[in-house]
Length: 357
Image (cartoon, rainbow, N blue to C red; front, side, top):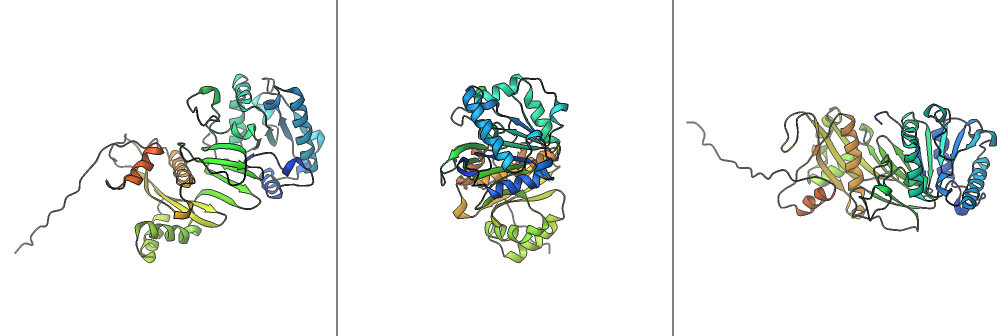
């Protein structure tokens, strides 16, 4: 999936709170409206309740409730096609729809049905075509790398890996994010959803947003503020350097935003020369990373790393390198935790040279 795409919306329980049609989750509905790009009354939906099909009564109840939600949002019944994944629809058939909506139920059962029917390839093609994918519960977890976080090697629980984060659904507000996993962990609550693009993801709700994105020059001031803290350098000196780096196609900055507040930054680069321990060819380099103290141990650093990693992959990199001071044990353990492997250690020397007489 090398194409640019931006229309994936992974919900916890759909678009209405407490399963009540008088309690719409307006921010999520607005997000969907922006993705669809046309009036809901004109949009076509491929509605897939397969995850609940192990229990036919439950499947009927889920279908009835969520179909009513769609109609309450002004989707027309004649434009909603209910489909149980069974191999009868081709990729061309599916690409005729504006929206694919995969609902909740048993995630392992859904994943198995998807794989058996070859529907995983169709989902990838649908997303890559920048069509709108909506997940609810199991339909959301399907797009993660793995949905059994305590048994990550079990292939029966493997997802599609389109979202580079682990997700737990139906969590109580305030549920802590796990920090023992190799990717960011999102504890999704009823009023929340995750928007996913080829560049990263963000958690959205009626109250706040947590976003990971590549910074533009418009973000130079918050980038500089965070990096001047990291490097313990005067703001103006870092700003002058960043002006050059933002104009350099081999450098990129990545931000973590809580609503509009910058709470973390990573600086990545493309290196074409040899880098210790790497293979030939262009490789990515993590030049620096910083998260505000009050936001640490929430998976933000991991989210920044993986946002940078995707940018590097888009530029042909197959490795990311980094470094840390030999006595910075916190940085060392962080690198190891997120998948870096130590390659070598080096001591630098300097010797004074007497001036020529």
